[in-house]
Length: 272
Image (cartoon, rainbow, N blue to C red; front, top):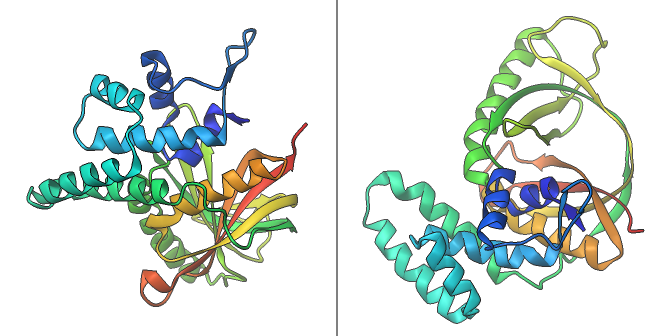
């Protein structure tokens, strides 16, 4: 089972919204600890979350969303609803473009439900020293992370060049859930002394004994699908996520986004 923080990360929503959906009865946790009050979810509930978000972005009220979900709208009908809304959004002002992108991202997740990633590899990951810059975003949605992480990397590369520090491998990003939102870490591996003063942070990521990894091809705006498929594989194969993941950008510096290659790493342990 997944903690509410892990479920928010994999579902690309905020913890605050999950609590709200729980209060409205739209998406109940699979289990709630009666002593601590902690909420736990199953990876299979991502299916309902995807539909909930897609319907909300169609313009339905949450009350209407609840009614549609209880009627168990089929994939074909949902496709029709999404295509209709897409046509409406394309006719609107440019400010609606972000909403359209969210609808399309949720549609990709719905279409790939039940499809397992082809080449999941479980491996150990060595410790790594990173130069990094960080920034805060509201939630795990790609359209919130991309506008923050891309400028962070641009600025990091500039500062590394000015400091005469060489990058020793592919860039690595990771995320932390906080009370204020999600802290985005944009990092690059370096070989520098810890404690020396730079205009960027130097951090040591610990070694990982077991990580479920998969290669994501294409732009990072589509990475949500790969993460959710990986989460389903982890649960189906008797593992659970520890709540820590990394993105290793194997080939994201050059060429069109369609040619990008990213390794997704989800730290795992055997389920009890």
